[in-house]
Length: 390
Image (cartoon, rainbow, N blue to C red; front, side, top):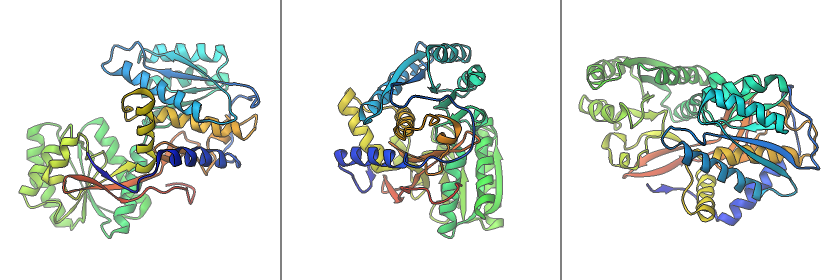
């Protein structure tokens, strides 16, 4: 995969990232909420909950990537002391709850992780009466709220960015196409919510059974509804590991191709890299992290650990960067909900991000397209938040 963007020298990136994070810490504002008092002049204990010892394929590698990224972030902080302690959740909610309690008993002032939504919910509930907040790596907004904040890129955030861009390009009459699964229906709701928030038009909504025959049967209905409503864009919830590969082939054959109607993906349509060769995805839009920042992080991580980071490793770095920026402010209440939800947010390795009182987040995302089998960034991510969010 080749990404076209305005490159940043890695040394300049590191300086910019740290400067921005520390500069943002000068003003702490936001909602009220619980959280422990800390001594910012002494090491602040942070618990990292990772899926080590899990039997799920890839969890052990993920656990090591998250720890590596967290330690890289600590090394980048200046005049901030963090005592990082790592706890293995086994990728299991019950174990996550037990480790959360143990971490707080050990003195943790905030929990970073776990990875999975159910584990995050269990960990948060286990320490809710201990006045400790959880920065989970999940993107599942259903588990957010109370003392749980999710760091992962959410469907709502992605949909808002893409719908707003479609509106700005005169393509705000949108048909939604989704598979009838819990995940894709959740994605559908995120898109329809974004359409309402951004003042776009929901032209049509078409679901299909998640099978090859289900997709084949739905194609005539999708093309007919777009023709009848005059939709300018089709927003898909499916990814290239699921129905999108079939949809991008069959819809153009029925006259609904990306040359006449804008394709928009809720997921990364450039993954896997072989997807870049698919004709039906040429010209499609999707959201990606700030490429200058994320590629700089990948370069530094690879130099430090000998291999590129997992796509979600940066969440651990972001969590430490946020905690470090708040500690740097010297406020003993820095890790309560008011500090965590300051409106100006934080600078992370995938771009800017901020947390909300309901436990969800907003990330500064770029808009990308596929052109000549390459990924092209067509609308760069913002470098600062200009309003209350969404």
